[in-house]
Every structure is written in structure tokens, then in C-alpha cells.
Amino acid sequence: MIGYNKIGGMVLTLFGLLISLAGFNVIKMGNDEIIGTVLILQAIPSVFLSLMRNRKDLLFLFTVIFMIGIIFIIKSHFEIIESRGLIFSSILLISGSGFLILYIDNLKEQIFLYTGMLFFALGYFSITFLRELGVIGFANSLANIAEDFWPIALILSGLTIFINRRK
Image (cartoon, rainbow, N blue to C red):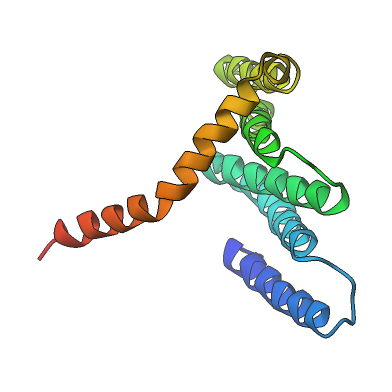
């Protein structure tokens, strides 16, 4: 039977092949489209495998990976001006879809249904109402500040892990 490692190996091989073909202009695919395609091709068989093996953790993970692949494909085909607004809304909608697939896997767990619907409602709310209130502009300014200090946070995190490692 095929496992996660075989799926991952095949998808990584395809990823390398697509990157090479795009680099030599044999195919006309951008990086976002290639990444989205690869994520979708990794997620589809992995979701089915997770359903068969009753692995809820991997089911949620590969559902999220599938939805991220969809976002990459959408981003590669459309000009999106406010990508940070897309990311924030996508996080909410992707989380909602992950919880809904967990509910579909086990209909007795009503908490997954309620959590998924809550995330979908928050995603819809962020798309419609927050844009009108100007919250997206405020979030963009915070993200710009965080973008400047991101390398410092990574360096400090790495040093903390290195200093506190087991000897």
C-alpha cells in the first residue's frame, strides 16, 4: 500500500521536474502556480490516506495544505492588490475547512462543526466588514512593522534554542 513517504517522494520529484521545465521555458508556469499544484497533488492522496487510516492530525494538516495550494493557484491567476487581507481571511477560511473535514470524518464530534462554522463566519466577516472599517489598513501597518523586526525575532529564537539545548 502506498504511504505518506511514497506520496511525498513522488510529489517532490514532480516539483523538481516542474521547476526545471519552467526554468528552461518548456512550460509556462510561475513559481506560485507550481507550488500550488504540488501542494494540491500532495494533499489529495494524503487526505484519502488519512481518512482510511483514521489519522485526524494528518487529515487536518493535509486539508490545510490543500487549501494553501488553492490559494497559491488563485494568487497566480489573479492580480490581488491587498495580499495581506487575503492571507488573514485565508487563515480563517482554511482553519474552518480543516475543522469541517474533521467533522465530516466523525459526525459525532459536534465541536468540529461549531468550530469550523465559527472560523468560516469570522473569515466572511473579515472579508466584508473589516475592510470597510479600515482594520485591514491598520493590520497592514502592523505587518510592515513586524516585517522589519522578523529577522531579529528569528535570530533571537535560534540563539535561545541553541543556548537552552540539552548538553
